Length: 300
Image 1: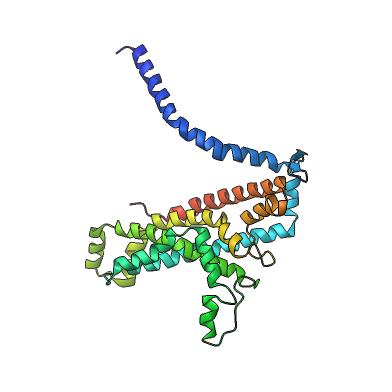
Image 2: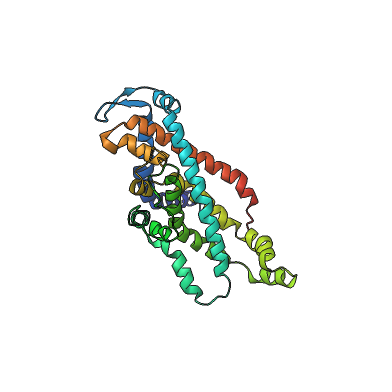
């Protein structure tokens, strides 16, 4: 085969590969790259009363952001909400998955029951928790009344609201986390576990020294994905608290929504600057997670 023929074959192969990539590139371009570029452009522009760009303003929106105490509170609420949802949801799922690995009766029923939250949408689960948290007729207050506890304002008390929304979010994430961890436990090499048992490892020592290191890839994956998901949470906040009371559940994504769309604000420049901050926060946290946590992951 001549060099000319070989070159033609390579070009044909490259064109074919590019043709397969075109649909994905179009989707990414329309739904990711174009909105991202538009947000970057809007973040350095002002907007008039109806949301039309009013001209280039440089970093005025960013300067306004970080000099606004309300925005600093939004960042703090976002951080607190992320911590309150990511680690508890993984820890609870891990405990349940380890318990379900034991040979107990009706294990399939319990696996299905604990994985059930994965089947609910955020809107559906939020409505359910809205009923549970209802101060007048909610199930939780009904149960507390039997032990003499006064009605609790789960969603309107500034000290309790974020905890209540976080608890609902943990329940929503529990099913997915349980499925991932259970899959990791199901793929553990039996020969390694059997060798550990023959060496005398059992109970908590077996779980801590053998099982936990072997499922660190799944745990690391859940930490990264769960953090991104928590930073982007919106539906449960919108349905349960509408960002209140007193802004104690207003996360960064909800603040973006308020500035851009709620009450016809149309402050797209300011909202886009917040969106860029959110992007940088996600990138920074993810980079730290890969730089620090991944070193402790055991890839077999």
